[in-house]
Length: 370
Ligand SMILES: Nc1nc2c(ncn2[C@@H]2O[C@H](COP(=O)(O)OP(=O)(O)O)[C@@H](O)[C@H]2O)c(=O)[nH]1
Ligand SMILES: [Mg+2]
Image (cartoon, rainbow, N blue to C red; front, side):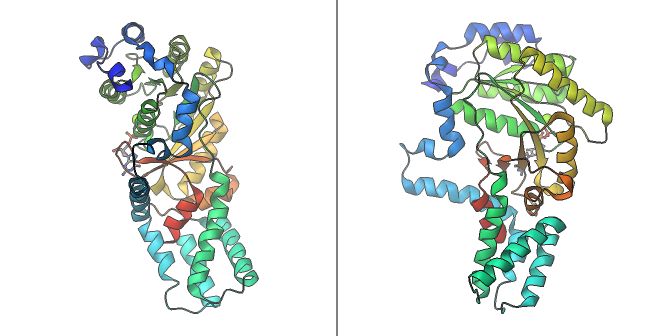
């Protein structure tokens, strides 16, 4: 029903041309199907947030659901295989002695967990081994999994979308981190579950970046606010107004990639945030930093800088299906190097639509330890 109601992209956008925001407003306003308003977003979206798979439960057998979960866990495991193999292999055919603990310590540091998190994890593991009188290496491996899951738990937080309308989400990060891709995946998943999503093409530096989002919006029948050569703050401002006028549930504002060292660009990000708050004093409700899972300890300085500039509410960690070492999240959870343990809402495990999953500490720990 929903897909029928949504079929047929607004005429003006089919040509794939950049259209001033006002034009997009009109075309969409004329064609915005009323049927979308029927389903309460909170209810529909919550199912996705709590467990993306659960929502499909009526049509799928338990086996299929388990298969789906296995498939994305497998991607995560595959991506973290290097870390997993090096951690997991330590426990094969060895005795539980000081050598094992030392090797484990080195392996955690090599996996990008960093000195602080490694010290915390090792202390917790030693305590548990002692408390439970563990004598088998494989039981130590299991204990490490549990200790790591508990350690990462501080980063686990559901992405709550129903409490305010529209929920204004600002997306930040360095170039190539996966911002636009993640917005696409997120918009798609939320829209499929009945939420009305509006995107703002706030990456106005490169025409290609704007077109990437507009084109994606066309294909998926998601409205996009884009303006030729406009100030990104102005695009964000317009999108919040448009989101409210059109009764949208979520407005996601894409931004251009920037390095924390590019101070003028960090200032521009602060301005976007300020201007969003002019359109809605309670917004932005979420300020997300997208980080590439392969960036190792560099993730910490990115979190610190973006947090200081715009006050982060959450992270999206992408490309965990690649060669990411995975220990980085342990460093984030430990608050290493003065970094606030900002929650990880989502993890990216591939380039496909379904390859964005809620972060679950226990699953992640299991994938990491192997
Ligand atoms: N393998 C993999 N590739 C990803 C993931 N997320 C994004 N990418 C790829 O990373 C590249 C940069 O993504 P993009 O969204 O354009 O980055 P942006 O500059 O931050 O907007 C693209 O080729 C994406 O397909 C992921 O989770 N896994
Ligand atoms: Mg982009």
